[in-house]
Image (cartoon, one colour):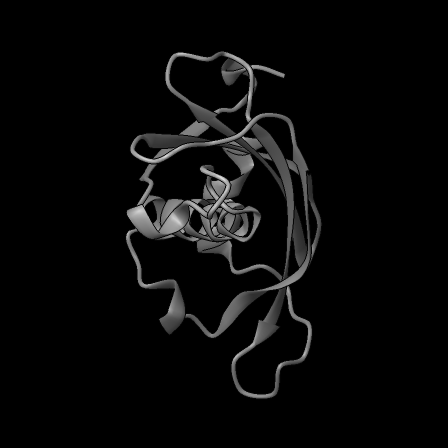
Length: 137
């Protein structure tokens, strides 16, 4: 896995509060990076406030393989790709990179299942979302 494996990248700055007593970014922050990268990408590329759509993605599954520590201060580049694009769900792979490293510090799996806003019933991915996900496959 390297930076070039990810068709899109988003940069996220680490914060003072992200480091724990062991001197590295705490594991729970990685999941926040995943969420920020995915939703930031969707908002920027669709040009709409995804919270206003009739259907939206809820997180159904996450996981993280920790390979190396991330540190404050410094930016984290989150590489995004889609490993599965279904009718109502999408599986993302997110690589977290820091500095000039071509190898990720962590690789995450992030699954969105789309539901309707009114009754939370599983529903197809909105076309405006699907359009910006297809280039990531």
